[in-house]
Length: 411
Image 1: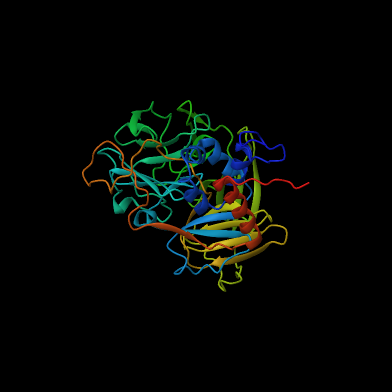
Image 2: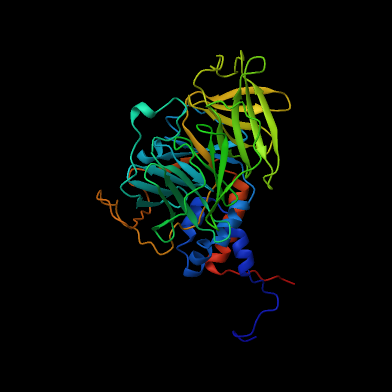
């Protein structure tokens, strides 16, 4: 048999099989295997690959500020904690699909903890911190602009929205392009001290300060709209709007019932109806692993996610992480001192594919962008439970691909 003749018993691994293996590898392995070839790098930096990997079933992950060594979180079988060590991460932020947006005075920073990319954009002369006398206990932001961050579901691009009502200045930033564009003014003002939420390509702002309203903005058409149907909230200042498992939700404290309850309302996909999915009694309730009664005054609660087992995880403004089982009505505190940012998914998408890694941007305000492979003084770390059989199997398959081995059946 000549060397150029194909062996009929030889098995070749197709590109589809290669992608199926790579998409299930741990994050560190994927980042390492990018250097194998240009073809692999192009594959693993594509939006299709990033979207596929985010859809692979995994345990729930939460992003928190700090590091594992200093954290008081002792672990939970239903979730994993990812820690972000970065000075900027201590500021209030917005998140979407594992990408973090951090508004600062005169700057807007966008960080992808999975890839280590860090972009910083000048936000203009009107961005400044609010006066200390305008701050209240329920403030989530201290920037004078109503901020929004999310992903255009049609193009896959990440965008930042800024609305400065005092200066009649409304703009949107396409992170891929790195330039601000003007927006048509919204139909009414919203409170700049509250966070927004992005759900399926639209950003939502909750306003209770002037009138009870929910303002929505479509990131693809870049048009504002008013959400017509609203849940019957107690209208407490502690209400928060969030993305709860890809559905718009509002968490509110109701004090009209005996005691006081944390109520979580969830909107359907058509924006036509709301359903009170959770009503958790908090009054006079001693929390296991916490040992104290939850205080009513000046406490705000933010839902995070629902685990595969059905447990609801949420945190409060006193840096406590809670776990609630709706079937047994059992509530416990999983950590009494942890600064949770948001749910976290490993997102491999490049924030700007053509961006060349540079050093930290200069302090002077200028239009443009800067990208770091790793944010100075920052890193991500998480607790990993090794499963030896799976790792050995995966390593063997990847080795076969890397070195072009083939197996010939012996008859």
